[in-house]
Length: 108
Image: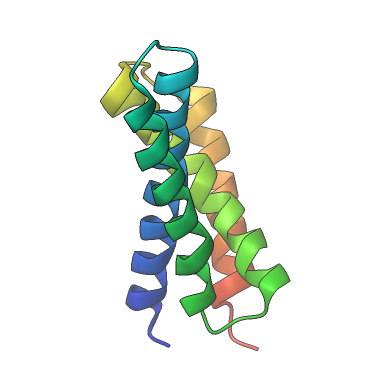
């Protein structure tokens, strides 16, 4: 599988998990209508499906996804909630993405 397609799938999975979780958060903690929770649950189901399209084993796929999740969560918080990542946040995300590159994309 080309690296580009794999990265796109990881980003899509991240948007599904973070977006679905954010919708649930808005419903349960933000006082939004129950429909937000229903949509959030549906998006979270998509999150469960998208990673299965990766060619690697479950453990390797989810370990790699963890690094993407770190970076995407910081970007989501910045874009949606206005929480600007600081230097340590960025450094941590870079370290996590370095691990992603090694785990998923290093030639074997």
